[in-house]
Image 1: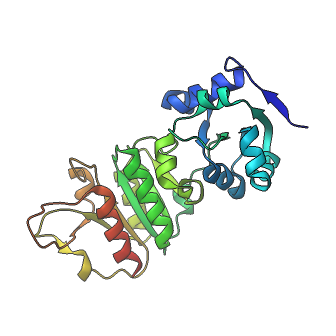
Image 2: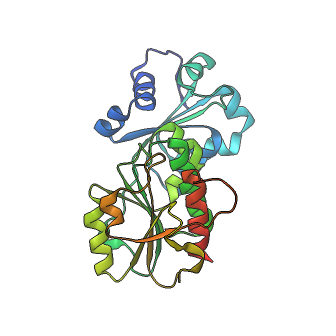
Length: 260
């Protein structure tokens, strides 16, 4: 028989609410919050450590096999009331599944595959963009993502936009992208950076053999000058009057070209 939690003032519920709301709390505790059947099931499937799983009675009855699977993978699992679910939920139509998980291990620079294809994201600040880019990266077969100065990949918005990809895609968290680019180049990898500058080389004409890193910059300012100085500038050829693309769209086209 599963344990029950029916009080919104329970310490585990209060912790989950805090983790969902605060990047600082996620950093301090090493935990992150997931909501929804799909994300909770993905966390169980990927071997993500689930500290606590919370499921409403209705959801446990409706999605019995999935609920049992998720709860079986959790260190502790609880049936919760609808009142508690409303306290936990960040969505308008909650599915009644919530998990508090331990953060995934990050990729190390030494374990980067010198023959792999990586997307590097510099100062991406919109969690919807971050999640969407990583979802596309997984779908296209990108080897991994390198994140520097970006918004929190463990925020609920990032995780929802990624639809589970941030639980599966290898991610390297860089605190010095220039240094890491230099090291990746020493490994024999080609490093490109995207630019709206029409004088840059067209990405459609660049050879994409061997190990490659492509850098996508901040939504408003693009790739920093410091990073640009270390990379080969490439641009996505465009027709019409548009001067640039949304970061997630630019990343999608870039990754498509990388994987053709």
